[in-house]
Image (cartoon, rainbow, N blue to C red; front, side):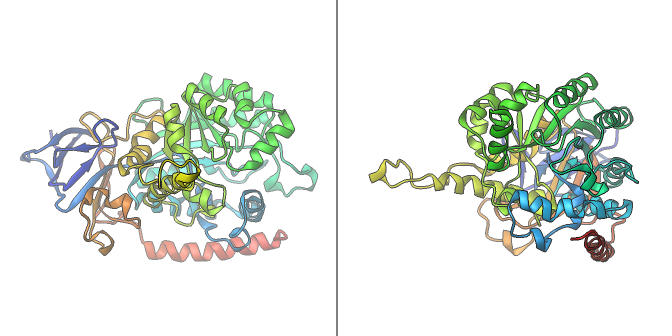
Length: 474
């Protein structure tokens, strides 16, 4: 049996909580899975990848994205806005300007950016839907992910209600009919969803927000349908204090209590953000085994705050990392995101420090989160949230492997080179990236991709989007 041998790694980080580092230097891959890790002798028919001066990580698992926003980076009207004003200024203003061509280009750019950071699994919260939509965004997303060779999870978003009068709304902001939305989820599940634990394609029930996008009854019905189809559930929740205010005003309870009453809680549910949680909500999330897609860079960029990941994990919540959309995160890749997660958890704890004369007991938050914690959140943690048996480097697991060559000066002088891809920030060179055992990046090159051409296409698309959004009244 022919196999591939990654030979001579300087370090192997596993993504496993109990054994975060491997003592081995070599990884053998056969039939899409890791066959062995250790000090291995090449077989006669092995393809050998020379991993000297390289570190191996599990491929990153990104659990929350909005790929269409990859053409909305740094959009001026929303750049200095908080969440609600930013939504109106940027993603909502531009959503009707997308056609099939610009949507495909945006998806390609976002996926390429992720792959070049070592990401092998992408969950996209795709909510760009309106009545009479002229293109099938879901099909485009699956096609682009397949072309790059990554695992793709479509979180089928949508809304049946808005905050404005439908007659006054542009077509692209009008809500869907609930029955049409649910029928499309069934169609997508039948066409794309793979139930196996190493699936390359998954579909998820994912209303845009649980508080604003649907009614309570529709939420309950969506949860019933999802579970009948074997799908997981995902949505935004408690990103800012507005969620607390809105839930109190509309329902008289907390956002998470509202979700729990509609059966939107449990080990098959994960929420993006969860920045503003009350202690009783953290306990409820943990007791139910629910998960979080932690999006530190977007939360920082929009001024939303820093989710208390340490408290959430201690309560039993499953922790994962997502980059969110590029319209609120101009570096929407997993290396940047994990670097931010590592630093911001420490900053968060440090902000709670008080002087000893005022009852303080610690100086700062340098012990809040380790590099190994962050790698676990971004790999096996993400796989657990998505219900996949991936995200770890150990024999028997699917071979989703990022092999980083730390040849940039930012990594020179490291006493522990294993931590470089997270601790030092930036983008490390990929010696190789494997997904399900297939090499999808080699020597930092994605086969068939012309980055210069992609950049030129993006610049032209931005101009077209600006013109179309301007014609709609800005």
